[in-house]
Amino acid sequence: MVELTPLLDAPALIVKNEDTSLVIADVHLGIEYDLYYSGINIPSQIAGRMDRIRGYIGEADPDRIILLGDIKHNVPRTSFQEVDEVPMFLNELAKSAIVEIIPGNHDGGIEKLIPSNPDIKLRDSRGAIIDGVAYFHGHTWPDPSLLKCKHWVMSHNHPTIKLTDNVGHTITRQAWIRAKLDESAVKANYKPEEFEWSDPEVYIVPSFNELCGGIAFNESWHDDLLGPLFTSHAIHLEEAQVYLLDGTFMGTVDNLRKYSREKFKVPTNKPRKYRRRKHYRP
Image 1 (cartoon, rainbow, N blue to C red):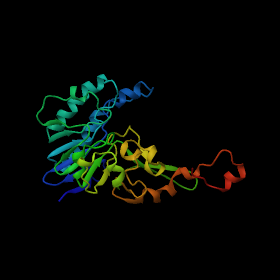
Image 2: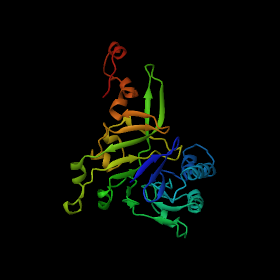
Image 3: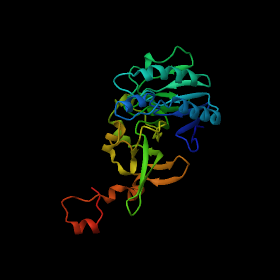
C-alpha cells in the first residue's frame, strides 16, 4: 500500500511502497547567477543545500531520490555555475541512493550536465511511474500511462499561502496542496483509447530552493497558476486541502481566501467613503 508522508518541517516527501523514495522539487541550482545579473549578489548556497538534503536522507533512509523538475535554474542558457554544480550535486546524491530525474521547464539541456553514473537516471519530461506512483513536474500534461495511477505527485508552482490580519499585516508560508481532478477536463486532453481513469489524488510539492519565492494559492485562481492542469481547470482548486510544512492542516483554498490580502483591494473608481467602509475582492 502506497504511503505519502511529508518530512516534518521540510519541503520533502517520503513515498513508501515496495521501496522508499525521497522526493524533492524545484532545486533551481544556479539561481544565484541569475540574481547577480539582476543586481542581487548572493554567493552560491550549494553547500548549505547539500547539508539540508543529507539531513533528509538521514531521516528517510531512501532507496531512491526523485528530483521532481527544475534541478537547474537558468533558461534558455546554462550558466557556468550550473555546469560546475549540477554534476557535483547529482554525484553526491547518488552516493546515498539511486537518483531519478523528472525534467522540468528549466531543465533544457540538462542531459549534458548529467555525469556518467549508472545510479543517475533521466526520465521523460511528461513524467514517469516509479514504484506505483506517478511523478511529473507539471509544465506539461502527464504521459497517458500515468492516468492509471491513484497518486500523482507534481511541483512547478512553488505553493505557498498568504495570511493577512485585519490591519493588513501579511505572513507567507510554504504549503503542501492535496487536490482532486475533474475527469471531463482531463479526458478532453487525451485520445479515447489512451484514457484510463483512476480518479487520482494530486500532491503538489513545495519548492526546495528558498530563493525561488512561490505562488499564494489562496490569492490565486486557475488562470494565475502555472501548467495545463490549472489553466484547463482540471484541478479542483477551491476544494484543495492546504497543509503547512509542520503538518498543520489549514483547511481548503476556498476557506483560506478570507485571510487573503485580496479582500483588502478596492476599486479605484469608488469614492473614499466607500473604500474606508467596504472590502472588495475582484
